Every structure is written in structure tokens, then in C-alpha cells.
Length: 268
Ligand code: PGA
Image 1: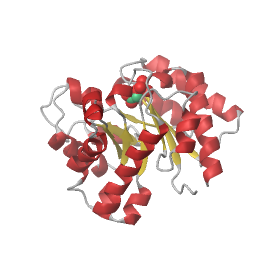
Image 2: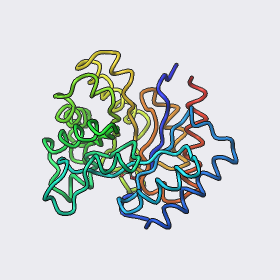
Image 3: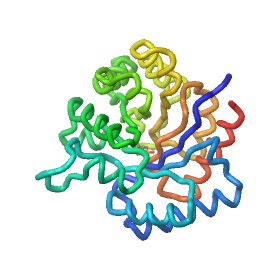
């Protein structure tokens, strides 16, 4: 089996770490990965800090030439103006962000982020030259009904269907079943693979094989250094992870990253 896409592990820090803690973490992570001659060509490493840490992380990463990427956890759909509290895609791009998480379940739950808004977020992120990481995934009730795949693919379709194939091929999709986020319950390899495959098939059916081959599909939901290897080696359509809780511990996060690099390497 061949994985043609470069793996990626992204840490979603949510509302944790101020700018001092964030830079200390990045510095430690960079040292740890340098120590083991980490191959960033096999596995991209990204962190998604709070808005308030982005500038400090940028300065550190640029001044020390650290090959770790970073991004934001959400973005405004408008480019500027009277939108108190919002941050535009251009502002994030100016801070060197590579990625923006779009439609994380916590944003969908606590903020008025509906599908139309998410399409606009994806467009804003792409227009600013960054990549959106679209989060989808079913709740326990959809899973009990047996409609988890339709649900997750439906969420992708709501956002992706109006994009051109060029735009769509820039996307990353994170399959994050709600019942697995922050609960310690992980999807089984079988169900994670089914979902990642169904998402890739959606892009195949909608945009064709070339786009489907480019799309990176990540898994998120209680990923840690004990379950990462199994998930990745069992799931041919999984290209890496979006890690929440375990990304707050630098040793744990470094382990997940190393496991991913090792397995990604063996698949190439
Ligand atoms: P978790 O969170 O790893 O703590 O389950 C994942 C996420 O919310 O992206």
C-alpha cells in the first residue's frame, strides 16, 4: 500500500497556553524533534494556538528557522470593518499562518457557525493563501442510528459542494466523531477507516480522482501515543491526526509526531 500524501499531525490547543507558554512549548518541541533528526518531509507538524500567541510563535519560528507550521482555530468570514472581536483571514496570513481550523464541533456548538458561514470561512482562508482544516463528525445519536457516514459526508458536502476542484484540493478534512473528542474514547480503526474512506470517495465522486488523491483526511478524537500507531497503520485513507488534549503535553505530542513519521515513512 502506498500513501502518496505527506502525513500531518496538528495540535489543536483550543483555549490553552498564553504566548509565553506557547513559545516555550514550540522551543521544546523543536529541540526534541531536532534531537531525533526528525524528518519533516515525511510528516508535517503544525500547532494551532490561540490568536494571542500567534505573533510570538511566528517570531520564534521565523527567527530560529523552525520547520513547524502553525495556524488559527477559526476565522472571520469578512475581510475588515465593524466586526468587534473578529480576526480576518488576511490578518492570519500576515502572521504566517498555514492553516485555519474551520467548523470544529466546539465552534459549531458555542458560536453561530452554520454551513453557509463555514463555506465563507473556507473561501476566506483559501483566498488568503492558507489551507482550511474542515472538521466533521457525528454525535452519539447519529452513530446509534447507523447514519454516521452519511452525516459526516453530508457535512463535508454542505461546505465543499460549491468549491472549484482547485479550491477543494487545498482542503484538509478532519473526521472527529463528537463522542470521541476529549472523552478518552477513540473510534475503532474499522470505523475511522470507513469514515476517512467515505470522505475521500465523496471528493472522488464530486471532483474526480486527482482531487481525491490530494485531499488529506485526518482523524481526531482522543488520539494519544498509545493509539496513534494502530489507527494509522490500519487506516489507509488516514493521513494524520488533529490532536486536542494530548497536544498540550510536549512529550506526548512529540511521541505522536514521531510515530506518525515512522509509519508515514514505511508507507512511502
Ligand atoms: P481530543 O480533541 O484529542 O482532546 O479528543 C480533538 C479535537 O477536538 O480536535
